[in-house]
Image 1: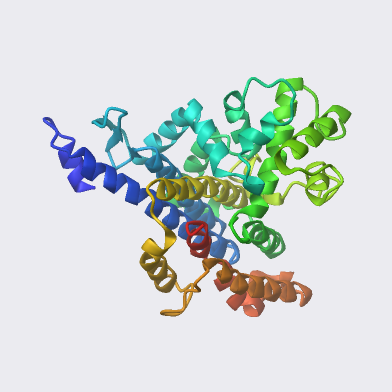
Image 2 (image 1 turned 45 degrees about the vertical axis):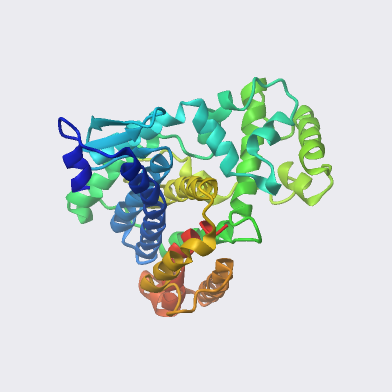
Length: 396
């Protein structure tokens, strides 16, 4: 960081190749750190410490933003920031980390390249979201104009991240007990129970479950944006779903995927997406969960962008397994030398922990946070280790 700040001085003495290497490496590292912050936020949530949960979740958001911007050649570094331009040169610009991160991300999200990247990142069934939307056949002008709406459909209205920053300031610098809204062990543990299954990895698709929900929301928002009508229950939307299913998956509405997209199967929008899109005061008792949800979705984007960066560079997971092993071992995800050949196998510990948490629910832990910790401490420890999502997400 000091080197970049020094090089930014006039006349600047920066080497674009070296800076590019730094930015590329920081994309993966920021993203992994973001998952770590998110896990610690979940841990604080399960202890009733909502101010710390909010504080840590905001930093998970920030690291996700820094990681995503880094994949686009943008380095947000203290008060001196840099971008690699299309000519291979370097441009420096001033601004503090927090303010510039969100301003840069908001500016980027308005560019056609953002919508194109987001479509490429999430490919349910191996098909880009742009192709799924195009397959609806509803007269859209293309995927890019829907990019902004797509972000909002995810609950990623970027203006809300600035509000999360202000709430973080309140949690970080003010006496929290004077303004802290009470939380409940039932609500917080239930959130964690519903959070993890969305991130269960499957072969070849580490984010299969969450991406299917993203697909459904994207198709619905695309239809609603173009027609001005609600999608659910509209016969024209059902016909459009049939068209895109046939074109992109070779199946019809009667299949499991078709029933899912039509909300005949698993009809409810996951609580994670509802929380991410909720506009509420930071005094709301569940505000910390809203920040955690927004951080998780932005981290999913940053992870996908980092994965694409690695793939485009021709770097295979085996070439950075040394890093994955170190991350897993130093953060307590697994014992020394015990990282599975397939990192997705780390899910087994999460599955066991979820069963343990469920058993605690049956045992009536919801009397207090003390009883929650007394009966499910080991499960919570595992479920606070979101670094494992970074490990299997970046190994795809």
